[in-house]
Image 1: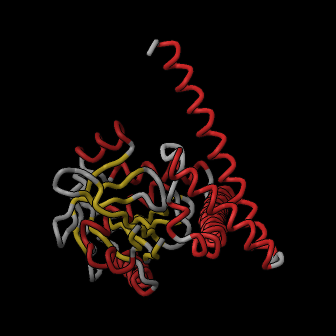
Image 2: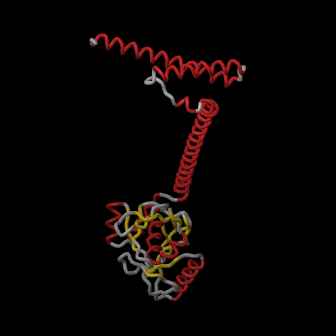
Length: 228
Length: 74
C-alpha cells in the first residue's frame, strides 16, 4: 500500500466519521427538541428510532468518532441534563451577583463612614482648635515627654510608652483618634486602641493625655478604649 | 512657683500660685478639687523627665500638676 493511497483512505475515513458524527448529533438534537416541545408521540418515536440507528451504525463502523455517553441513558439525559445545567448556571450567576452586590455595598458603607469621619474631624478641628492652641499643645507635649520619647517623636512622628500595669509597649502616633497600637515583643502591631480626652483637645494635649493614661492608668485606658 | 496646667481647647491654661501665700494656696486647692470633681485626672510632672505620678489629694508642694480631662472611647 502506497503512502498516498493510505493517506487518501485515512482522509476519507475521517470525513466519513465526521459526517456520521454530525448526522447522529443532528438526529439526537431533533429528537430532544421534539421531546421538549411536546411533539406527537409518533414523531418522537420516529426520531428516536433514527437517532438510535445512527448511533448503532456509528458504533459499529465509526467507533472512533462517536461519544457513547449519550447512549447510556438517553431518556435521563434528555429529561435532566439541559434543565439542571440551566438551573445550575442560573444559581451560579445569582450567587455571583449577590456576592458582587454585597461587596460593593460594603465598600460604599466603609467609604461613606470614612468620608463622614474626615468631615467630623475637619469640622471639629476647624471650628474648635486654633493654630495657636495646636502650638501650645505641642509645647506642653514636648515638655512632658521623656528624652527618648521626644527624640523618637521628632524623628518618627510617634513615640512608645510602657503600660503601667501590664508592661505592654504602646505606640502613640501623631493624631487624635485611632493612633495607638499595642506592640508585640517583636515590635509588630498587636491591636489598636482608641481613646481620647473629652473636650475636643488639640493633637499635643490628646497625645499627652494618652501617654499619661497608659503609663499611670492603663486599666482605665483598656476599659474605656475601643480596640480596632 | 507651683503651676497647675489644665488641658483645654486653647492648648492649656496655666495657673501659678505662691505656696507661701495662704489665699493663693486656698484658691489652688479649690481649683484642684473642682477639676477632680469634673472627672479630671491629676498628674504630678515635677520631675521634669517626662515621668509622672498620680495625685489624689492636693499638695501645695507639687511644682507642676497637669490635669487631664476624663476619657472617652474613640
